[in-house]
Amino acid sequence: MSDQITFTIDGVEVKGKPGQTILEAADAAGIYIPRLCFMKDLIPHGSCRVCTVFINGRPQAACTQPITEGAIVENDTAELKEHRKNIIDMLFVEGNHFCMFCEKSGNCELQAMAYRLGISAPKYPYLFPKRDVDATHPDILIDRNRCILCGRCVEASRDVDKKTIFEFVGRGADKKVAVNANADLKDTDFKATDKAADVCPVGCIIKKRVGFAIPVGQRKYDTKPIGSDIEAGKK
Amino acid sequence: MSKPKVATASLAGCFGCHMSVLDIDERILKLIELVDFDKSPVDDIKEFTGRCAVGLIEGGCANEENVRVLQDFRRHCDVLISVGDCATMGGIPAMRNNIPLKECLDEAYLNGPTVYNPSGIIPNDKEIPLCLDKVYPCHEVVKIDYHMPGCPPSADTIWQTLVALLTNKPVDLPYELIKYD
Image (cartoon, rainbow over all chains, first blue to last red; front, top):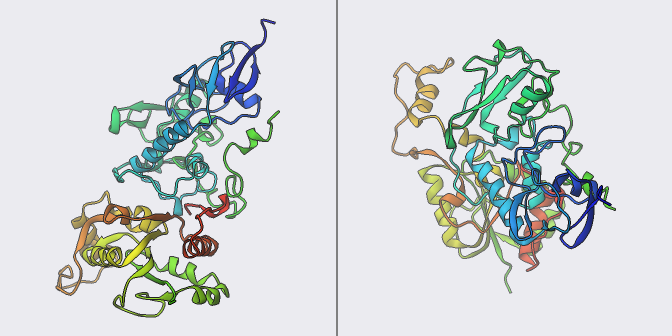
């Protein structure tokens, strides 16, 4: 029996394998735990905290926390929903998110999470920070106005593409995704076929000449909330 | 009993949200049964004639006149709604928010590649409202009761919200009707 671990999420019994995280086990059971920075096949680093759940009464990031026998996990509660809304609100006011002309709109995970949580407007004052755009690369654009510092591009470039094109620099409000120590993106060996070109949850790293290809109404999150594909697998 | 009154205004917006109001098509006949319009570009009434049940604000605050109109709406309306992304977050006009105002005016009236302005004067007539340092979402200027995002919010979103408010029902919009684009 040691190859199976049983615990509960919101009172529902879930079985998982040793070494799985709460998030992986929940996904397999068809229970959606909201998340932003997590991406399948990348090493989770728990930076966004959207997937925070209570495990035996203590807040933990579900994407990094391994499952344990008999754990009592709270996920879909009013308190956690409020916590998640706060994070999304802050991400919206800390960047310059102009959904109305963004190529990613409709396919954006930040926007989709706000839709799912029912946010009609962020409750905090907008900061309108000054951020850089790097359009030097022939096929790919970086618009840091939209960056939410999820770290997916950093990980994908380092761990999958083995190129380490992206890295975080700076701290706090000045933290940003930098390219190969001050070089422009065109000076790197970044290719549109790299994994790192496909992982951005928002419209920060986007491929040129493919924007607005899908008409409004048929985009990924136009009619179905983010996470509904996982919930469709509910047992 | 007289019908409740609705007022609308376009501040720093493009009138697209007002177009979306008109996009309710033949339901506008039902709307007229439900409400009277007070101050609004729809009927061209310039000043409030009395207390209004609902005020719809399109656009954020880019100049001092926008602020005065918005404050006037807050004084006269029981429920004030930010309609569209400009009212909600500043929208396209807010793209100037991380550029100093002087740089924006210089680009528009002095340095822009298509500018013809031999006098070299940036318009400064006292009839022209002064620009604010940046474009503010309405809820950073007055209390806003509801936000209706979208660029513009669809006619269905506006219709369902208005009807729910005017018939004292909860505003419970389906997933498809809350969009930021």
